[in-house]
Amino acid sequence: MEKNILPIKKAVLIFFVFACGYFLSGLLRAITATLSPLFTSEFNLNAGDLGLLAGGYFIGFASMQIPLGYLLDKYGPKKVLSILLLIAIVGTAASAFAQNFADLLIARILIGVGVSSCLMGSLIGYRMWYADEYLQRSNAWMLMVLSIGFVFSTWPVQVLLPIIGWRWIFGIIAILLLVVIILTLLFIPSWKNNIGNVEEKKSGSLSDVWKNKFFQSTIPLGLFNYGGMVAIQTLWAGPWMVRVAGYTPLESAMGLFWINTTMLAAFFVFGYILPKITKLGFESMKLMKFGLPISYLSLLIIIISGENAGATHFTIYILTSIVLTLAQPAVALSFPTSLAGKSLTSFNLLIFVGTFIMQWGIGLTIDLCKFFGRGEIQSFQISFLVYLFICIISYLYFILNNKNE
View 1 (cartoon, rainbow, N blue to C red):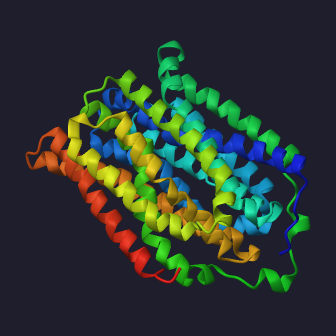
View 2: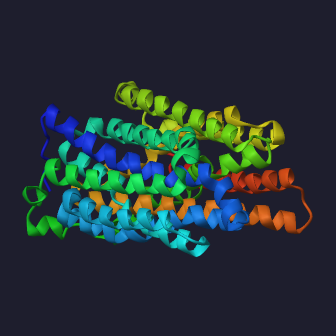
View 3: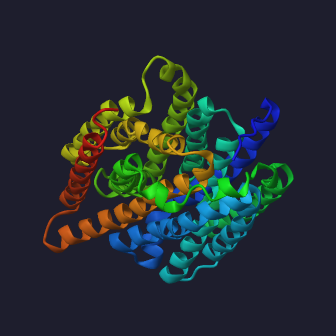
């Protein structure tokens, strides 16, 4: 499949359209952290229920990744994104009308299915329409857009709650999703002119991705390190601040606001400097090898600090974990364009299965510790310590399989 590099104005317009969809995807992903105190009281949820509810998004998301790879390679982002976003509208509207935990969970799963192509569709488009040296930048800037969605899911949502209520917030998001579908149909290029010959389409299969040694080395990183970092950013940082550090719900929302605002700026700077530092010899592998241990140290400080660990600590942890985002474009560049969809969605599957496992797993571990008589603070500390141990094992596996890189 041949690349079709677009002129700058067209490339910027395409980025804007994709960014609108991914912004809403991020908003819907992280909004559970802000609404968790409200959902906990209104629907009488325990920590395990809350983790499962937040993880429902990732169940739907992960379930689509393998078929999504085939669909995107065959039909392209325009058709796939616009159709799936219709399911996101249904899920968002269902959230607005939910009457119990089961309703909310089903709605979250539908939302996950519906927004599953927002990032993958864009990255496959960038792989085809942008020069290779700008793929890391476009990936980082899409994550910046995701952080904007996370930012809007915090303090702005908390401010709107007493004015319009959480149900109307979901209603407004449903309308915005419809706008994104219209923009996608109007401005995203057709895929039919980008499909190569029959022989090339048959040249790569899903098994080629999963048998690749580099891809295999990234599996634990995607599942546990990356997935766990997302789980903390989009869910467990909020409950920690409320139930361990003693924040009020509004203070927690403000803490999440500043965490995600910092990440927004970090992704912008990271995306800008990546092509420059890569030319100086600081490639993705080196940055991940030397950067990840710093994130583990910052997480250990959170665990040890306990009730004294607040928004600043979580900001530092997530900021030092930014090198994890290099794994996704590294995977994409290790395969030909004919395998772009399958390779990207396979790694994305790892991230979101891992996020579901860690969101629910952290909640279950907290409940289990409390069942055995541990206090609230100690239960959170033990749960996060288990996560840290898994991260270190995953990192060592990655290092041992890439010693010569």
